[in-house]
Amino acid sequence: MKPLLTRRFLLTSATASLAAPAIAQGVGTLEPTAPGAQRNISSFRSLDWQPYFSNLSGGAILVDINSRAVHYWGADQQTYRLYPSSVPLSEDLTRRGRTSVVRKVDGPSWAPTPAMKRRNPEWPDFVGPGPDNPLGSHALYLSWKYYRIHGTHDTRKIGRKSSNGCIGLYNEHIAELFSLAGVGAQVLLI
Image 1 (tube, rainbow, N blue to C red):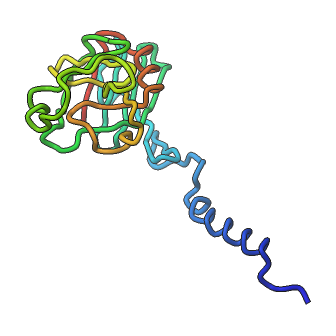
Image 2 (cartoon, one colour):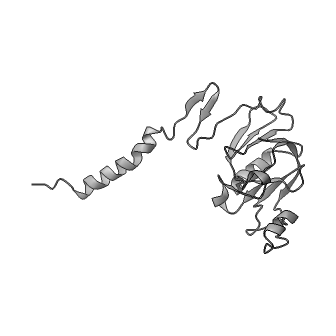
């Protein structure tokens, strides 16, 4: 007589039970959630630019602090990108409103702000470009002093409240956004 609980049976059952929640949630599928909106597997929503910007002249970047997502629309009205991001640690470090890209730097250097230095006196006064730099590979400087959309070498920060005010992206995502968004691009943080 063959045993009821074979190794193959146990492995197959375990695999099926682990996959069941993902299958039940429709992982990997796009399903409508509201007219004109869809959710992807990470539950970010594709958005239309019109509720946020009057035009796409120069391109437009929307930073949604709550969903921890960065949206980019190109001036051509065809280009759209959606990136996961890190956001500020707390509401008092968060700035919301309209600004613009005033400078772009490939290989940025970093110096802590005076407030950061007060909170963390052990931090270095300056870090040049490279793998130890908290700004990652590229940075889009905003018209607000000390605020940037930049990369990070610490990928654990993406999708979390982990910054001192800036918006962080994976280095490959900031490199793409850097190539798409020009100086003068509109930016809205909500």
